Length: 189
Ligand code: ATP
Ligand code: MG
Image (cartoon, rainbow, N blue to C red):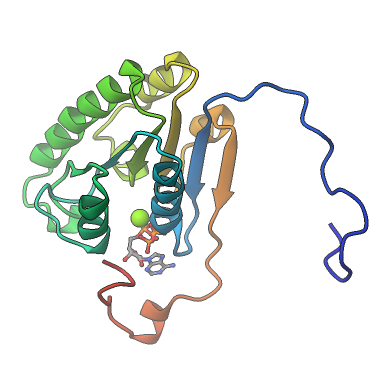
């Protein structure tokens, strides 16, 4: 697409396919994967659609900005984990939480009562070997066709990328952490 000049003709052909639920993946090493998933959740909520957010690496009691905002909006957001892995004293416990959490998320996706289900940071339990990939792929393949699912996290497995409809890689150009700026409320959490 030429971005040096304003467009003079339509940029896309009229789509020929039917509307249907999508699998969207936000991966890559740059910041913005979860942020963009929350943005989609807001957009869907704005359209009056049922949204459910699961966070695989956040604790159930987390009170970050997103939890406060979605609580005000009445959008359910649920932490399924025990924080990031380097804090996990008991990795087997983390793995069990991930499997229990997945069972909840899978039931929600298969039930088909939500327009959008966010599986935030699900790539980490997949990569750590806490969750097997095949049941996740099977659930996505077999889900009711109107259900949209967003999966986030670095290092998305190739099989997930292959199955997805839309995959965005956040490219690390710069990150303020590398300049020593700590995590800040309203930006990181
Ligand atoms: P965010 O939640 O801010 O959208 P993210 O979902 O893209 O970030 P994760 O891989 O989930 O990123 O990482 C979680 C934490 O790591 C966040 O605090 C995020 O700001 C931080 N982070 C993201 N990208 C980078 C990076 N390139 N270098 C260092 N820290 C990063
Ligand atoms: Mg994230």
